[in-house]
Image 1 (cartoon, rainbow, N blue to C red):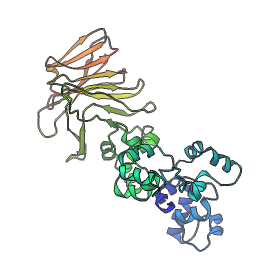
Image 2: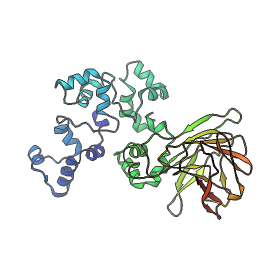
Image 3: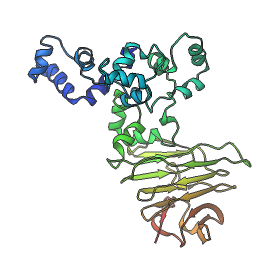
Image 4: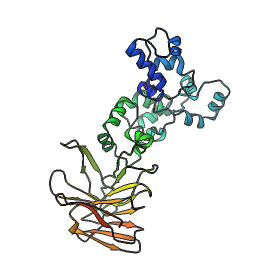
Amino acid sequence: MFLSLFNEAYYLDQNPDVALEVRGFAQFGRYPNLSFRSKSPTTLPSGLTHFLNHGLGEGRTTVSLFYNEQEYLQNNADVAQAVAQGAFSSGLQHFLTSGWQEGRIGFSSLFNEQVYLANNGDIAAAVQGGGIPSGFYHFINYGMAEGRDAGGYQSESGFNEDFYLLDNPDVARAVALGIFGSGLEHYRNHGYQEERDVFITGSANAFSLETIRTDYSIERPQHPGTVYITGVEIDFLLGNNGAVVGSPRSFGENDIDILRGNFGSSETFVLGMANPNSQDPQNFYTGGSGLATIQAFGPEDFIQMSGGIGALSQQVTMDGVEIFHDNDLVALVEGVSQQLVTTSSNPTTGAFTLALA
């Protein structure tokens, strides 16, 4: 169980003192730090070697993105008491000693036991029949390699993983090394502070008359970069010039979506995109009953549209500003009492942006 759970790159990233000694030995054939040299005078070290010989006893617990020490103790009061009494150096030591056999799980926001079992009936049957102790056990030992969805928060958000990794190749490399479980994991811990842009996208709606109301947003601290929000489904790829290019898979003709921002953050609500393959605009929420309701629109926000400014019209109502494209209502900006102004436009592609005056 442990060898499947342990992530070398993550352990070294979370324990820089260990990483320094491991890399120093690999480069110079000796430890820079005498304390490490006295502990392991001849053994070629690795993060795994350090953890097995010293780290576990020292109470180091950051061995995997799929184990969270604090949550494990919070959800297992008996283990927390045993750790407090000195019976175990950490909750992780208990988990590795007996917890996993008892069906206890590592408690990580990247993994959801209930969702995993609900999505994998064969695994649920094996757990119920006593063949394996938990869905978590299966995922760590087999499911991850099989490409099964962990069911954690990266599956429950409109956060577009492809955009983030394409736009941030350094993060993509870190995810490939296992330092982060996903681009979303990096964003929530570091990316928003580093002013990295994100794209929140929706999904294709197969209904025509019975539309689905969908609320797209992301829980986050105030974001100093830009968050792009749209209710339609978009595929992203790298263009010839290395820029990230979006290709819509749905256009929201009959979707009723809520696009909700955060006051104090900078969001761009995307109601249309320039077509990278032609001069034809890609308009969203047109040609049917589709409507995007934009909430929490502030002075730092923008609305991106396409098709040329000449097709734009607006009407102030009691609920906010209605936005029309060729007399087709496409959006309602709630809580705004005046028409928006154009802040930028591209006559070649027909794309333009709107903002508060």
